Image (cartoon, rainbow, N blue to C red; front, side, top):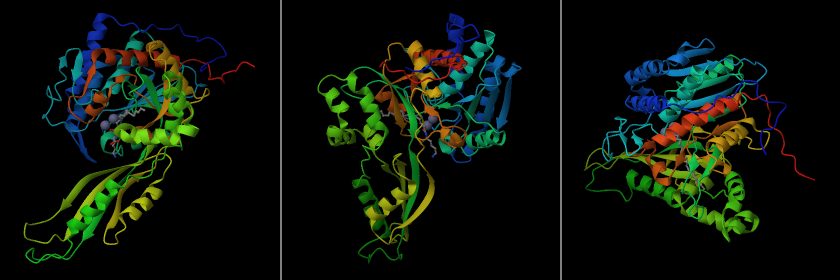
Amino acid sequence: KGLGGKGPQRAPRIPSEFSPEERVTMKESLKGAIQIPTVSFNPGEYNTTALAEFGQYIREVFPTVFKTSFIQHEVVGEYSHLFTVQGSDPSLQPYMLLAHIDVVPAPDQGWEVPPFSGLERDGFIYGRGTLDNKNSVMAILQALELLLIRNYIPRRSFFIALGHDEEVSGANGAQKISALLQARGVQLAFIVDEGSFILDGFIPSLNKPFAMISVSEKGSLNLMLQVNMTPGHSSAPPEETSIGILAAAVSRLEQTPLPNMFGSGLPEMMLQQLATEFSFPVNIVFSNLWLFGPLVSRLMERNYITNALVRTTTAITMFKAGIKVNVIPPMAQSTVNFRIHPAQTVQEVLELVKNIVADDRVQFHVLNAFEPLPVSPSDDQALGYQLIRQTLQSVFPEVNIVAPGICIAQTDSRHYAHLTTGIYRFNPIYLTPQEFRSIHGINEKISVRNYETQVKFIFEFIQNADTDQEPVSHLHEL
Ligand SMILES: CCCCCCCC/C=C\CCCCCCCC(=O)N[C@@H](CCCCN)C(=O)O
Ligand SMILES: [Zn+2]
Ligand SMILES: [Zn+2]
């Protein structure tokens, strides 16, 4: 299954073996990157000093990348970086590797070590950005640096785009890079971005890890609900206040989950592909979803992570009301963050929400919205998907399950959707449910081993992408 071909690769293969000195350098470089607090607070509100420092830092630790004649480096939107690596064979369509430099804030509370210390403990490097997503920023540039030191010359051109505001929209980074590439007439064979992992321990009855390559991404809707009422003296209150009305409205939303969409897409495909890995009777259940679909969909709802795969989720994230203890509040506002399932649209979610709230006194203001992303191909012809599979086989021979999935969060790749039909969100590192909770949470950390393997994966991936082989259909025996 997968990549077949017209002939062998032309360039000799460079083995992904790194010296002890190189291994020390790569982990120290990651620690240095973590120590630069490139925090995004709000759209347009970033630590610009840190972002500028980060730009200098990558020049220092990856000198070969910056001095190689066939690599063009551009700073876009002041702090984002675009590298154009010119391949020797213009007949091969270029691809792009994405990552982001910025991180979400990390107050010290609850951390075992300060979040911007980059300290190493028990084989782990701690800090904000170690999983999301400086690991990728550094691993991509590190792998390229190591390849260039070994006199590597790529055949297939590729881009590396490092956004500086992914955590707050991507409007000044990814969107500007995307516009630049579009103006240059670039069309990409595929994109690889963050957004999924080799999942370890996410499905209770599956006792081995599996690689989930996210081929779609949920949309989002940030909706502000507002209630205005006549203010007055609290000594003679009305029957209902703006706070009471709005609290009841958002409570109805929380108590009424949006429809379970299981049966209309990717999670079913994923479970069917995983079915043979389970023992009886789960294998029978997953391979006969036409019969057991309703049961499985209810089971998926019970866990908050798998629940996010089967429906548009509702999260009440902000509530603001009241101006003084003895004043009937004139206004109450609440913001609700919906993550939209790929089988629904922003408009459909809005209609459902209005029907659930069912109160004319509540006004709805769409703050911003983004439709779910189309499903990228994962068949034998899908070059990006097959290259990830192929590289997984050699770097992680112990991982023998690869399945397409949905990214439940948003990534910068959504801003490049008009440049390619193949967007694959996948980080080549192991992730446990506990580590999942550390992303945007506390004690985010990556094992040195995981990071080294991520560098190795990219080192091999870049070479695999040089093949003049094209994906071919799997020929079934007659
Ligand atoms: C049956 C197996 C179930 C597995 C379920 C999935 C496990 C989840 C695995 C990985 C998800 C991690 C996603 C990491 C990427 C995070 C990207 C991010 O934080 N994006 C932000 C962007 C905000 C943009 C401004 N609106 C976000 O989505 O909030
Ligand atoms: Zn991220
Ligand atoms: Zn994030």
